[in-house]
Amino acid sequence: MDNHSYNFPSDCTPLTNCKSARKPAGSTVVNMDNTGKNPPRDYLVWSLCNTLYVNFCCLGFMALIYSIKARDQKTQGNLQLAHECSDKAKWYNILAAGWNLLIPLLAVGLLVLLLVHLGTSEGSFDFFGEDGFQNFMKLFSW
Image 1 (cartoon, rainbow, N blue to C red):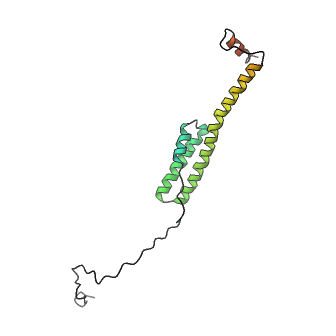
Image 2: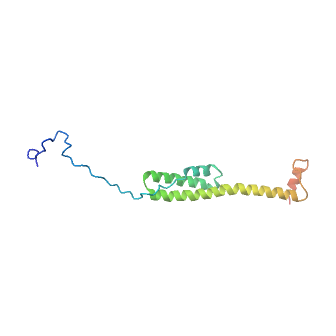
Image 3: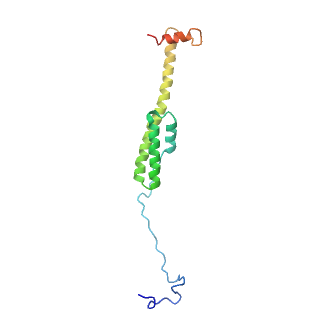
């Protein structure tokens, strides 16, 4: 079709902005796969705390790696992999926090047991007296 044979409306020409001849715009529907779901958490702050404190068997560091991976996948839009990395980061954080609490509690418990043992065996020891260190070392000699 050439331009000469096309009939334009009276108020509309090809070089003018003709609003009366335009059709009203329709609606656009965007289908989102995970509507209503919250994006997975990345537990980054918790992982940093576990990495900087005790970090037994590098569990905090592993949690930090998976936290960063979950955040990267979430920003790239891969929510399934982000959810998997988030779950791994959560469980590494739980394990690291458990160990971070258990080790100081065991140390305090052993210290209490040592003091109770020292107080009940062969009389009480005077650690600050003249023979206190020698008496303490007798406990460890065979």
